Length: 267
Image: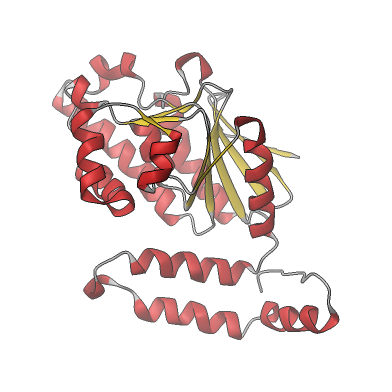
């Protein structure tokens, strides 16, 4: 197990077997996204992107009460009231969004307990979301008088559609794990006691697959979600061609012929 330095004890990163686990570590406030966490995340995500030994990233919350409960409301008076302070807050959130967007490795959100507001937006950055059966989801902005920006609305709508997005935002109510599964907000719901085991099985399975193929697939999924006139078709095609020219492609064929697990290197 390797521990990565983040600059704050509110954000922990451990890596083993090509899987990095990023833990939001603010359990006293249900893992609220404090200013310390927000400041550290862009650098952490950049480091994970640059690390060739990391093939999958799992993001989760400390303890069993919450994945993340959103922004730290106790900081709102200082950071989200004055226009200049709001602009600074928004710049920080934009940097985090860019960090997630640039992470070209699979991301799995391991969700237990409350996943609310900015915490839900964090979970939406993942490619795959697996939730414990005791999870609760929601965006309470309408009960706080907070405006919810277009980036967050678009991310939610792209996943669950406009009707569910409207109910989530207009009602500001909490949704159960079963409802989240029904609307397509999560990939699957598992017993809380099995959550970590099932997530790590999936993560290590993905990590054992061909990295170039995974990266090409992630890029293609992202581009397919854009309007046709904005898709980088040539970029995706170049990544697919790189797969066919790679040593991993030849290794996959050898492993199949020899009836053994492949040993992919990402080259």
